[in-house]
Image (tube, rainbow, N blue to C red; front, side, top):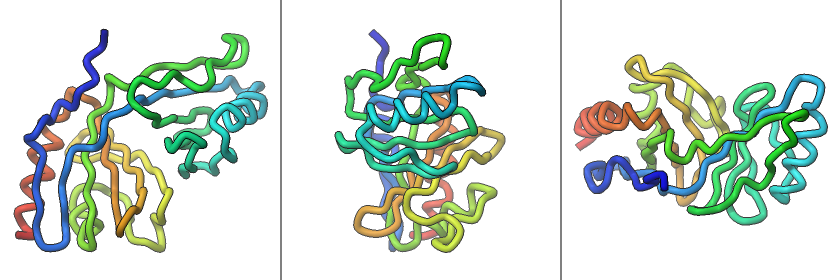
Amino acid sequence: MVERSSPFAATVQGRTDGVTLAPMARGSLWQVAAWGDTYAKVEAALAKACGCEAPAPNRAVATKDGGQLIRTEPLKWWILGADGADCPLQPDPADGAWLDLGHDQAGITLSGPNAAELLKRLVSIDVREAAFPNGAFATTDMHHMITRVLRLDTDGPCYHVMVMRSYADVLREVSSHHLAHFG
């Protein structure tokens, strides 16, 4: 069985005035891809299976079970779900493909009123409210790592920052270093 525990354990914890750093909650992560000529069919089936509308490019929408359906690329979606959940859509190979990424990504959350200020020191995208509102998703880079950022506000700004699991220590180190500037 694939180990789905956080590679951070308790090593990613921090709080300063206006920013909280914590491990991202673990759960299932699936990627569904369509072929060029089956895009509309797979998108409609995926939205139906998730019980939500299909998201716009680089946006996330809540699924019926409290997860997120994210349009990550022109022919790809990510589904964040509960730990142990099955992929809601496994397309026929003639229509597309699906992949379990639950073991592949490690993530942290940056939350609080100064979270965007800290994050803009790490990534090369504009994470201010006007350019990156609640539900926005982007793929960018941070210190030579492919980095995915998903904004899902709860009691204020909250950014989920994900990298390949093999870069978990670098993400922890870089984030903790910059967090210290706020304390």
